[in-house]
Image 1 (tube, rainbow, N blue to C red):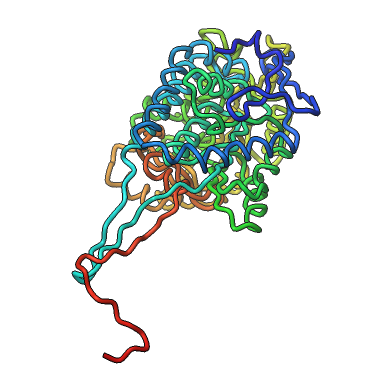
Image 2: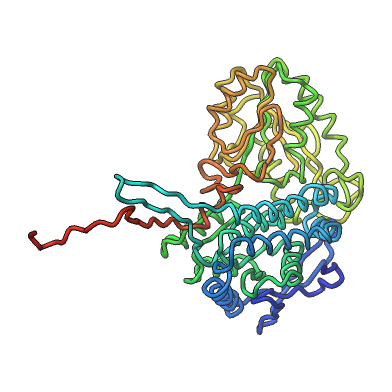
Length: 495
């Protein structure tokens, strides 16, 4: 497997081999913990992107969907095994590349990436059609066909896990892929290239190109790319949808979130506090399903806020490779600057800074931000339109279930929420009213690979996970067959 030392210059992966574009333009990947250069990565030029799409189109037309499903399934299982053999190395690369603590990448992100490949290996063999007998004369047979070349655009948060979720589903259903990881954290995704070479995946089935938004646009606008699967920010999603509309190209988008954690006064306080901390600050808070808005029923509000501030003040911030680190550096200094500016604006609107908000005193290098808590005594001071994507939580009291539902739904987003209460009937009633795609009831949100994941409103279009992923990557075809031989009516002929 490629080590960090070997990643001094990362090439493109096109048609089964590494390539360096003719322009030889490279960009620098910075290690969030130190601010030092981590790697120099080749940036794809228009010619390289075109070559990647051509290779994927050729593999689609000549090889991949023509293989038996059991053979495609075998390749996906082999990719999972190849990653599993080097899971410790890849987890360390991803931790250094993203700033996410190593124990999170090693115990969470990487096992999930491997499990997704294995799951969709099985899904390749479970892909089924349907039959509809009609009037004892016909049967209509419905099949799912692969669409073609899929452009997969992935984010810098949990990059390999998101990549495998979409690539595995696309390949399982017979498509081929051109994958572009985020330019901010592209390194762990290259483990897929090495795995593809090791298992001798047919050339062109999986191609990986690097670069920023301009390279993404080349993929989105290429006429031979039939499907776009994008995970990232809502603003970029709007741009992709606008670009794809001209060609009536199908697009799946998993976009931003502004999640809430609703805590009723009858909840188990220790479990609710643990859940709120994990939801808001896990993975550095850089997660689309982070529950950054805590809504606490008024009788519990004061005691819960005090306990939260005490626990957040004790969170260990530091080197993502250190065993005791709970929150690592954020992805860039620019991102930290944006969040600190948001904290200042929030305080000017009337929120009270209870802890955090600045750089940790003993960490002079890197893009660090202290885990932060702000309290808002009424919903009027909240700004429901912003996704924070960092270790920040706001805490607001509510008086009735209806008010908690109203605050949660009063946002452009609808990705996730958590509810904590000992009254399960009330919890289910609140869950029914929330306009979000995933809910944890007395739990954080658990992303079972088999269930749909996605959002309402501007949190996205479509669902990822399980057989639901296949809706984006397959076309439905209906074929009418006569059940018994019979004579068709002859137009214009009188018997």
